Image 1 (spheres, rainbow, N blue to C red):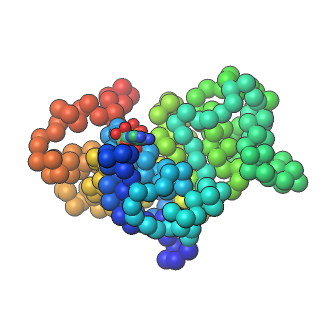
Image 2: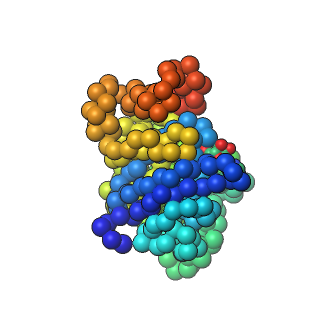
Image 3: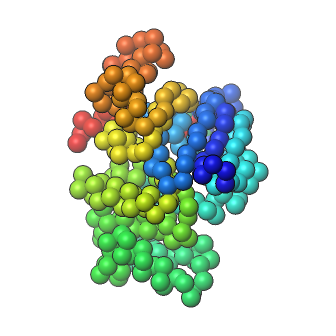
Amino acid sequence: MENNLVIDVKNLSKLFNDFKAVDDISLQIEKGKIYGLLGPNGCGKSTTIRMLCGVITPSDGSGSVLGLDVVNESEKIKQHIGYMSQKFSLYEDLTVYENLDFYASIYTISSSVKNKRIDELIKMAGLKGKEKVITKNLSGGWKQRLALGCSLIHKPELLILDEPTSAVDPVSRRIFWELIHKLSNQGITIIVTTHYMDEAQSCDEIAFMFSGKVIAKGTPVELIKERNCSNLESVFISYVEERTGEKIRSSFEEMKFIQKREGE
Ligand SMILES: Nc1ncnc2c1ncn2[C@@H]1O[C@H](COP(=O)(O)OP(=O)(O)OP(=O)(O)O)[C@@H](O)[C@H]1O
């Protein structure tokens, strides 16, 4: 991996028939960073993530993920990535332990290291004592931390979190973000999509997406300073207004992350 860049992709685009869901984006993410992808529904965040994970092939562009070619080495990329979706992908009728055991079997983790790894993750997720609890009986926050544990079973170097906190309460969100920072301190690189501006503020760097394009990127402090705004929400609005040439306040209010903030 050159220059310590876990992600180094240039001019990625994705067409679905003649619709450009992702339009010429370039991203460089260093090892151990927490990188936030932000933007309204349908702006192309998930499509971007799916290309980076090797799940879909870019229509155009090139680059590497974990030193592997994003177009030709997608199968290898998948093995080194941890992925957690907002739906958590847990088996509700299995116990906490059984869910972790199931993910260990998917990644063919040998039985000699499996139990130790599951123990580590149970501790990491604060699930000690809950090993035999049926997953459907866990609260949202516990489920979320179990899902995080499952996504880390194979010790991935890159962790991708797609709206990880959309289904949990504010206290669980805070605990979850403390875990994310611990993982990044251990050298794991994290990409997170979020609609919450306070979460964006906790990222080392962020990219704002709009209509398939990255319209701004940088550290939260840089972005706020550059635009002379008081917060990231205003920064985003100013970039969208500049891009569209319109006052977008009314349509902006329809965007999911504003709705969510208002619901908090
Ligand atoms: N397989 C597909 N075929 C056709 N269009 C698609 C496909 N996948 C995504 N799209 C379209 O591409 C655009 C970007 O979708 P994407 O899911 O990447 O957005 P997003 O920013 O992740 O949104 P959300 O926050 O709702 O998850 C949307 O208009 C979506 O309808």
